[in-house]
Image 1 (cartoon, rainbow, N blue to C red):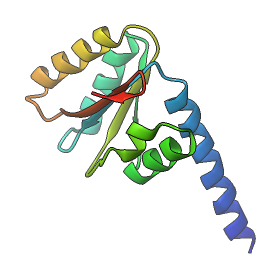
Image 2 (image 1 turned 45 degrees about the vertical axis):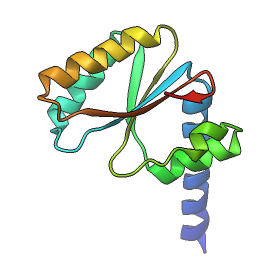
Image 3 (image 1 turned 180 degrees about the horizontal axis):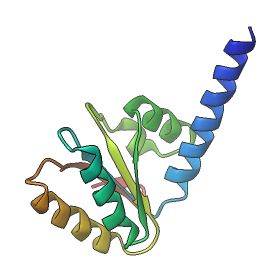
Image 4 (image 1 turned 90 degrees about the vertical axis):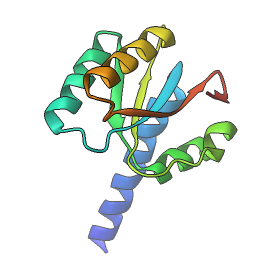
Length: 123
C-alpha cells in the first residue's frame, strides 16, 4: 500500500513539474531524437541553453494529459508518436528554431522536427 501511494505521489509531482514547464513556456518545439547518442543530446541541450531554452524527454501521453488539464486544446489534440524531446523556453522562438535547425544539420539530421506550439496553435 505504501509503495502504491509513493508511486502515485511521484506521478502527481511529475505531472505538476511538466505542467509548469509547458504552461509557463512562450513556445514549445517537439523533435524526435532517435539515434542521437547521449553525448550528442547533451551537446544539443548546451546549444539550447545559450538561447535560454531547455530540452526534456517526455512521454507523449504525459504531454497530452497536461495539455488536456490546462486548456491547451490544440496541443491536446496533437498526435505525437515515437520518441519525443520537448524544447521549451521564453523569449525569441525564432532564435531557438535556428539553433534546432543548425543542430539538425550538424547531427546529420538524426534530430528531426515533429511540431511546435506557439500562441495556442500548432505549428
